Image (cartoon, rainbow, N blue to C red; front, side, top):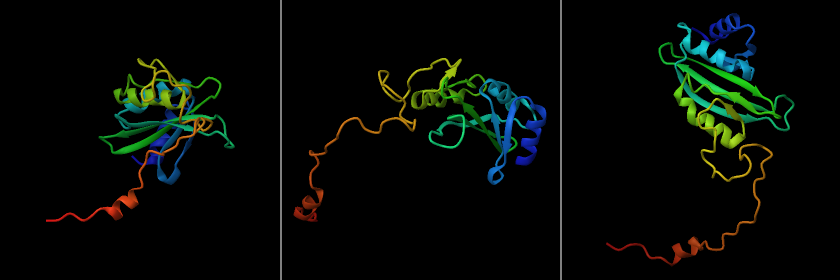
Length: 176
């Protein structure tokens, strides 16, 4: 099945759930509202002609200072092992209440990437069994992959570093 056929099948089968579609560089992409994600994901996995049985990645995007709404997006990259085709599901997420439902019931491989989405972007994953920090310490404040996250809060000095170039000049080559 080609990317065009995949997009057309999804669009015709779930007309009320699909906001938009695209075929950038020939790749199948669909845009979905957060409240329709689980319905669309289940269809993509269960339909025999699509059978997207492998979730290869979940990632977040922050569009701060861009000419678009909503600010955040969760991107799910799915692959069908049997049919050898892929699709990207892009979910626009509101800045005021950043949340998206979990798809971990369909793909267990979503557990850690969704937890990372919460940890790095502050996007709440509804229904996730462990909606807590994964990478950052539990007491960490803020979300490091947001574009408005401060890069540094203190001056870091590296005075303990040695001058390795002068050490190399002083050293002698090993003898045999």
